[in-house]
Image (cartoon, rainbow, N blue to C red; front, side, top):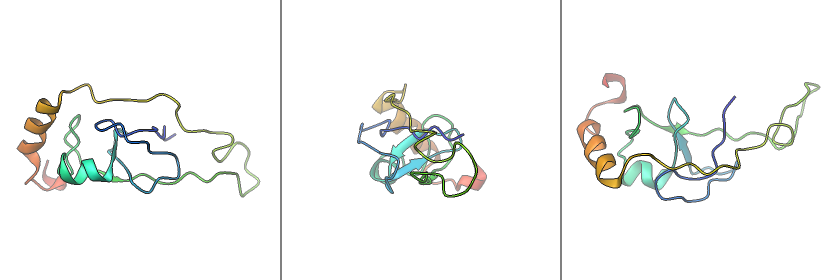
Length: 104
């Protein structure tokens, strides 16, 4: 299940579960839309993949399926940060920023 990380791993901007500014890669690395566009150039600094908008988890279960919604499956409370320095991120992302995600 998607972890719903609560912050941008680069600038530490809050990204609550309902945020439309959260972007994730296939491994759930989480960044804000501003960092993805301006700093990362749509390149995940961990895996080299691209980003997509993070889906919004409904607040409650709307069907008779137990344990759905934020009430039963809340967002992570732990803040995460990239393990790479700003210089390492810039260097890595610059290698792939002009390569289509389908070709990386």
